[in-house]
Length: 443
Ligand code: HSE
Image 1 (tube, rainbow, N blue to C red):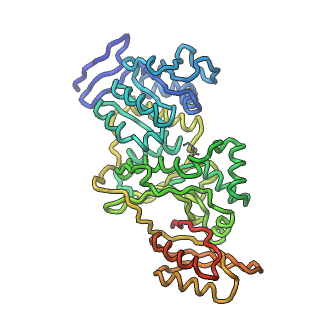
Image 2 (tube, rainbow, N blue to C red; image 1 turned 30 degrees about the vertical axis):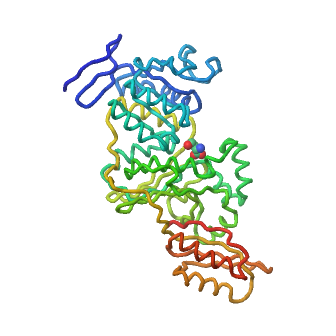
């Protein structure tokens, strides 16, 4: 092996080999941010330091931490001297690994770019940045012979990215179905178990610290769509623009839908789905009914999971905590250890050069409507569905003893556009008061 040592200080830290750059001995770490995840990273390292140092034959030396307020009291065992409030105080030539935990696109993108160009490996937990500008950063890393890892950006502590890139690399991944947002899963679980409406469950989740004061990113599906975009890159080799992902949140899910869903044998979950056909992938984040006996239906509270179907391995499900200081910190630390140990680009399941993102929207659907409670209405609506070539899987009718009654239909697979056309016609019938819900049904 040809080895050229190119940085010689008191100890040798970086060396070029035929396989790229490797880093040796004591590893000098710079961290951008000292919030929840950064603290979880430090605590996990200090807790497991001896074992980790033995495994990698190196130790981690946290030399610089970028914060807004240097003097703020922090519950982490680092000397005051490591804190700086200006990124220019990071001497990147003297650092080996930069861990970016400030979130958002700006200024994180610039900080990471400069770090990669200065020869530092970068670890990030930043899903928004990786979804929106990840491909640029991966190219910059490649051009500079360094690595960027982002395990903690999806699924917190669950090893999703590394599993797809390493353990499942021998497979063509044909489908992924994930609960990638803990806040919405917590809210839907509460609604299901306690039979409470969305607003009440959201308020409770906020009071308990499970949901943010501004819950938009979570409840409207942005967070899950960023995570799906990142997974799509690794599983399918397709990097979508975040807006290419069909996206719908959970604000409109009502307790009625949850109850009827259960009666029909389904739970409602916010599902991030990626499905690969030969020349395209379909990506969507939307609430969906999933059969109660499907493994993903049993993922409750703030837990996340990813159900993967590979063309050789079959079905695999990864489950765990998708957020929180220690789980996410442990994923960041795993990435740090990975770049120190392996120092290789992920191969990914990137064998899909000509694949494009396309929304076909072929699915079964649950439709709830309110109709006049009089003879023959159910039959007329079934005929109207039939006129559009929509075949029905099941129907529930509940008499309430008043003028109106709810009708619930589950269709067979149909294009969403076709369903919309049929429902437009049905909605205009004099015996239909309102189409109240349309929810995807996943098998
Ligand atoms: N806000 C995210 C969630 C956690 O609720 O799952 C961080 O990705």
